Length: 360
Ligand SMILES: Cc1ncc(COP(=O)(O)O)c(C=O)c1O
Image (cartoon, rainbow, N blue to C red; front, side, top):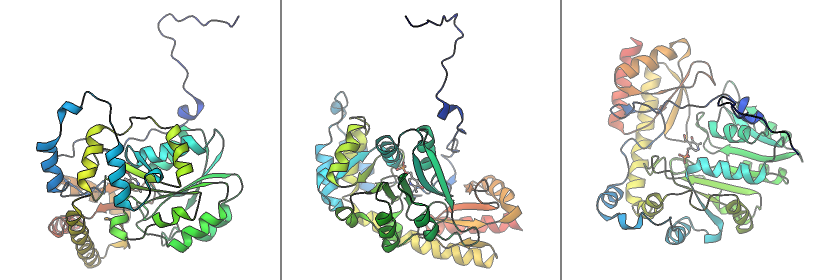
C-alpha cells in the first residue's frame, strides 16, 4: 500500500516545478479608471455606442441562469471573418487562444519558439506547461524582425511558434511572404500569428489558413473594439485542428454576455473604421511631436509607439502619471523604452503637452 503523509494543518501541497520556477506576471491594472489610459493599447474612447446601448437595454438577464450557448455567435462571427464555422474557435480573449494552443501542442519539455520583446503571455503559458522556451531577440538597434534567425532556428523539435503581427511592444509588422516562409519551414510546429492589432495595420494571414495546415490566426475584441473587460476573441485554423483545440478547451470559457455582445460589435464597422482613421492621424501627430522633442521612437503598425527615453524613462513615466496620464515602462525589456498607446488627436495633444512639461 502507498505511504500516507499526515497533515497537522500546515502541510502545503508542492507546486509543479514549472510554476515554482516562474517569475510572477502582474500587469499594473489597478487604479486606472480616472486617468488617461495610454498604457495597455486599449481603445481610448471605449466601445461602439451601439454596443453600449445593447449592454444597457437589450441584454436578456433571463438567459443568465443558463450556460452560454454559442451557435448564433459562431455563425455570425464566421460570416463576418469570411471563414467556415468549423474553422473558428471562440476564446476568452487571445490569452485563452494561447493557452489552448499550448495545451494542445506542447508537452512538458517540448520546444516553443518566441521572440523578445513580445506579448508576455506567450512565455507565460509555455512556462506554465513546462516547455523549453527559445526566445530570439528583435534587432537590438532597429527592433526589426530577425527573419533569417527565425528560419534557421526552426527544427524538427520546434512544436509551437508564436508571433504577434504587428508585434507589441516593438510595433513593426512582417509581410505575408515572411509568414509563408516560416510556415513552410515549420512542418512539425503549430504557428500562431496573433493579430490583436490587425485593424490598425491591414495585413492578415487569415486567408492563408486554407493553404497551411499548421497556421493559427488569432483576433481579439480587446483592442479596437474596446471590449477588453469582456474577454472575447477568436482563433482560426483548419477544421481538423479546430476540433483538436476544442477537445482541450472548457466548453463554457466565453461568458454569455461576451458572446452576445460580440455579435453586436461586429455590426458597427463605421465605429471601427472611424476609430482606426482617428488613431492613424493621431499616430502621425504623435510622431511629429516626438521628433520636435528629439525623442527617438520606433515606427509602428499598431495603436502604440515605443519611445527610447534613455535615462529619462522613469522620470517620464512618473511625471506623466502625476499629470493624470498612464504610459507603460518597458525598461525591463529594452533599457529606456516607454510605450505609449495612441488614442485620439486630442488625447495625444494632451500627452505631448504633458511630455514637454515633464522633460523641461
Ligand atoms: C500582441 C497581443 N496579443 C494579445 C493581447 C491581449 O489580447 P486579449 O485581451 O484578447 O487576451 C495583447 C494585449 O496587450 C497583445 O499585445
